[in-house]
Length: 284
Image 1: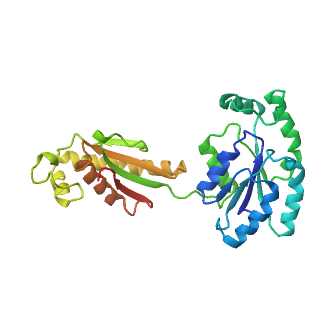
Image 2: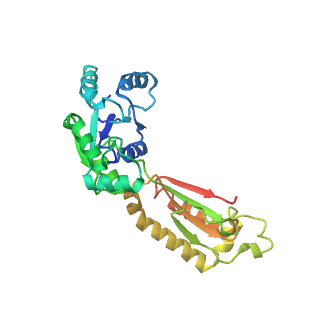
Image 3: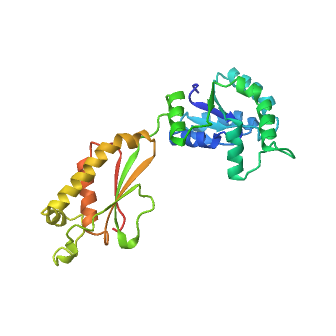
């Protein structure tokens, strides 16, 4: 395995290990947390045989494991004899930030005992001194948002490029409720309703007759144009967020005619311009 393919995430409790593993998981790593140092060797052997991660494995290891700090360096030496050079990402954080995080989460620091959180943090810092010295890089997460953390991981590990954000275009009916997964909702109920045209009522927006009917109206075409323009302007900025998906929901009353036709028309305009595109009609 190469240096960027086995990543050991360690460091201070509360510094964001789980968040980092989540970021790595989003970039096609198999991410496992709280891996005992005794199991890392057997885990790598299993990986070599089964190729579960496709060569991209991230493990979280920290002071929850008794004597972790004493066995960390010997573990690295053993890996080196097997020509495995892990990338060690050590997470650091300011005491004041850690204390606030523990206070907000109401979780105890594992090393506090009968003392204070600050004393537990100081004890853990001391125990992990040798681990920190062997880090490939020390990342201070004190003032990083999740977006900034994603950016830093991408800079640190160039192979950790997130999968391209998928644009979900969804039609729905307001009478059935707004989709909870929607990042933005557009209301198409002001458009002329084919439901009130007897010959069109039995059809859905997937039928070309519905689209032909709606395209007679200037407001339908302008509405589609404006959504398209907005999406093409905002899409580069949405990609920068590194999200797995972004959902645009277009609704009409029942989710059968106007929203379906508009979502279908919009998706056809964007094919080839947005790489990952998914069209869904919730009420159909």
